[in-house]
Image 1 (cartoon, rainbow, N blue to C red):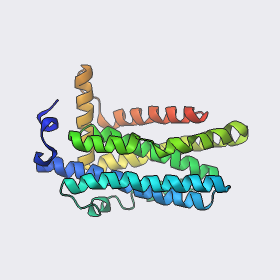
Image 2 (image 1 turned 180 degrees about the vertical axis):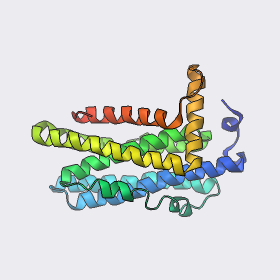
Image 3 (image 1 turned 180 degrees about the horizontal axis):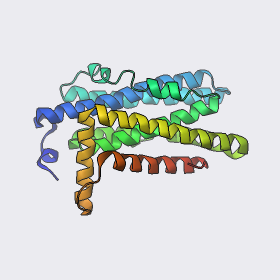
Image 4 (image 1 turned 90 degrees about the horizontal axis):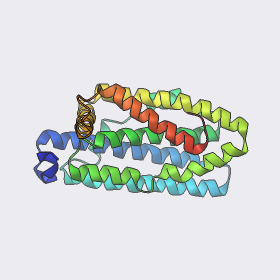
Length: 237
């Protein structure tokens, strides 16, 4: 474990503070965007049961965001300003992936949130221990997307035509989502540094020699996780 991991979070160098706040800001912004999407999905849900379930999931997103913003405040960052740099990050993704049915919208949330969470978890490996724990706990404890996965899986199992359409839609979604990740890595040096630091630590721990190229390694990991998520739905990735 490095000296930075042993150090108190409040004694980290300024650069580490700034990088940590940037990733925490991305996580918080993603949760806010997911809240808005889930609230919209809930309003148009086919059944009252689904409307209630999605409304609860939307509330859970705000709970996850709050945990992250508390850490931003501890690091001396501004809980509102830390998200500003990411405002509009998903606009192009949304424009390219407009769902034609309610089910496509639900799968879009499942895939998009999953890729975003997985990327943030990879980047979190380069954080100080306290910040890393906050991100990991917020994004893995009782993950909201996993709670509505059975809804998609049950519908797909009951309707082979729907399942086929959703499988194709999922492939398009993950391609577009990976495009967003590529933009983030290219335009946000702090996040690229955190991911690279996590890759270096992983390679060192596994004694695999030099760390792989950042973007190709990230895309490989995110694609593998996406395939596992689609498998849980009974859909071909």
